[in-house]
Length: 239
Image (tube, rainbow, N blue to C red; front, side, top):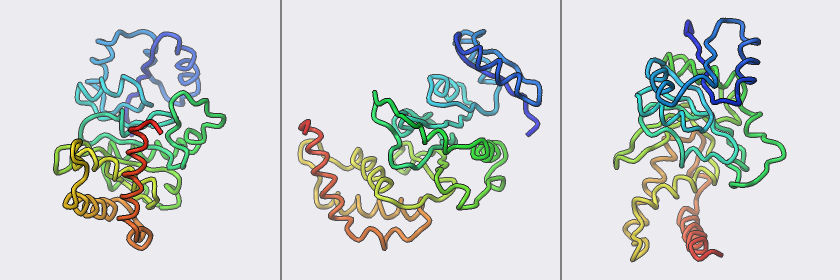
């Protein structure tokens, strides 16, 4: 890409920086353990892209206007902690166990192992070069999703697939959970009118985001909505 690479990190991570520096086939700047928060902000402001897992640095990068490529792993749910703004990228495994429950000691970390250097490389190419640079082979992205942040018509943060995702119930419930913030009345619950609007919006979002015939697989939208409401009610009661 013809870029300069700088490593960022806190004290105690110097060994990681040394290992990366020794294995790299090009010169890079290793600043791990050498910077204050203010200095990191200044460095990020001069960068084109930050590649990071879920850390406070991604939000610092967003604050100074630098694009982020977030590698979402473990218990870090990008829908709760992703960089806030338009144009950031998120790569994560679509394994059914992701994200982990907080406090759970995962014995395998498959969500980390599924994301390869090649996946991150393609995401960086897209971030720096635009859509024409992305590898769109469906098999290559079979177990990995790549999203780009945007704002929807209501001004809320949205996640748009760079590569269309395969529909499953998890994707459906994620969309449904998001829409409840907009349509549910805390006092009166969900009106009949809003139920219709939610289903309409779900279909629109899934049609945009998914590559296979989601309508043929989700004939029970109304039933799914009823199940979600019961689960939500039980969760609020602590059941």
